[in-house]
Image (cartoon, rainbow, N blue to C red; front, side):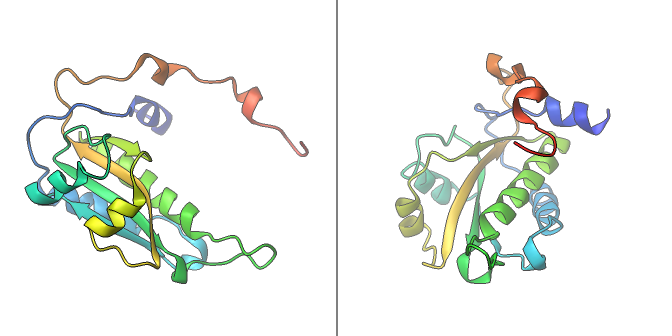
Length: 172
């Protein structure tokens, strides 16, 4: 399968088997995160692995979009370690953490592990529940696990805008 087919075959899994991820799989996903590019290679991302029964139960207090996952990764970034664009003060860290999360999702997919990128969570509850320092910003929650036999992509998953609607050349 070429990369485009592989990327297109990944979908948001919202129903998981009641089976924990093996540590080897977690390690591979985290290794893939570590090779993601970041602004000036500052590597400002931070990842919280949520995989104990207690921590997963706590997650349910922070989001309704937990999908009863056996494991989740909260991808965050350290604001103090971000590269900063001098022209307008924009931080690269949110983009860096997004690239890291994408690498993690694709590695999970390559291992047969389902994932959903969740933005619908209460960052204040996350911060309090998991003792996240003030300089670290939660960005994306990746719920992961082995897809349940009933799992499948939503109908809209395969609906794409024509490239011409999203891409322009040379000037807007």
